[in-house]
Length: 215
Ligand SMILES: CCCCCCCCCC(=O)SCCNC(=O)CCNC(=O)[C@H](O)C(C)(C)COP(=O)(O)OP(=O)(O)OC[C@H]1O[C@@H](n2cnc3c(N)ncnc32)[C@H](O)[C@@H]1OP(=O)(O)O
Image (tube, rainbow, N blue to C red):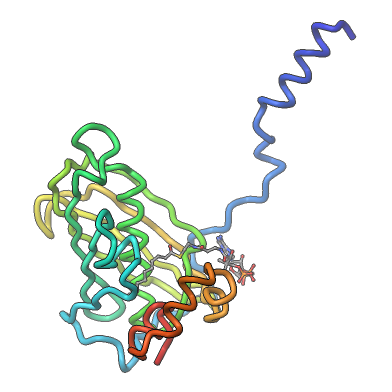
């Protein structure tokens, strides 16, 4: 093999992404045949009730995050949530337009809030987002989300965000798979300072809601 070919092979090895066939197929967002409809917990907040922030420092809903989304979620009928979030200038990607990652965060937060209606602690395993329309700074994003099915620890959900009003055109959509976890997921993996601060909060409700634990 010539030196030139040898160098090209090296470069190819470095630059070529791993073959798609070598990666495992992405887990499906379609519920398996044995999935069940979600069951609203009897103590879930009543339809129309604001959920409030689960953790003051949460980027999605915390009051203590100056550049956070300050998303406000409200329980709906069944296992559904509505939420609103106003795109601020700190949320820009392109000039005057919302950053796609921020919009995905708003979807993630809304979808995550759904688990509170089941009183299950769960984390996002997979989030697939469609960006359908640009969302200018200053826009209120009206989000709606629902759990579609539950299979063991797997919770399947979907959400959409509309602009111009709750019945306006869809700007973003998502499908997600949340995985139920134990509280140790947070206590054993979170940074010790924050865990200690939460655990020593004298307010029991704030303590349990930081991890969304069924009180
Ligand atoms: C009012 C309340 C507001 C709350 C709002 C909060 C919103 C924000 C939510 C988040 O953003 S949470 C933060 C982002 N997520 C994470 O940091 C999760 C990081 N990932 C993990 O910790 C683990 O990968 C995870 C706990 C998700 C799974 O690990 P496990 O070891 O527990 O799962 P396991 O491997 O046993 O898999 C269990 C099942 O889930 C499936 N699974 C696991 N990870 C998956 C994945 N990533 N995608 C799809 N499916 C997945 C897996 O195939 C399997 O399916 P089967 O039961 O059918 O075999």
